[in-house]
Length: 188
Image (cartoon, rainbow, N blue to C red; front, side, top):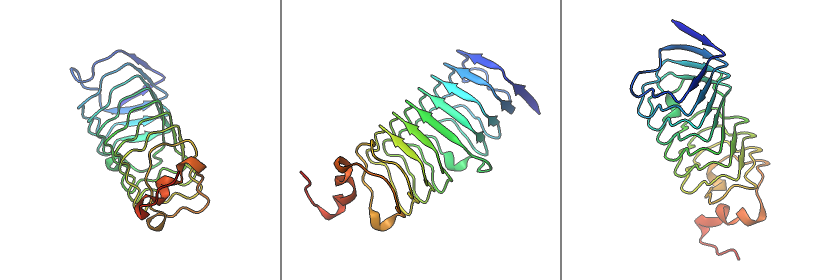
């Protein structure tokens, strides 16, 4: 199996020539194109993706361990198919719309200034996660663990407190309407 350490990939089109299968540790991917690529079985440890497009990439048994995505497009990804062992990712100014994190452990995950429209967080564990200035329009929270999760600056979420574990979750006063929407209450 191939092993790559501390390597930088700049402006590479991995839709034309596939990223070699293997392990990538401390690697940096800048402005690379992975859309519709097959990243299955590849391991990324302490890697960073900057300005990359990974939309609709296949991530079956892909390992993301302490990986950071900055200004990336990750639309339509099925993260629930990833290797769950030591799964740890953070997002900064990303578009993650229409993706799924079904049943994933996302404890302490940081979502910063990202679009998470229609993302499925069903049965995920988001304990102590932070949604900093994120758009959660249409995001699904169903039987999700949201204990100590920070939604204070998040926007457009709708969460049913009766169907999620929310002990000590943090919200701003302006976001209260997203917790009451099922009751048809108008908050002014």
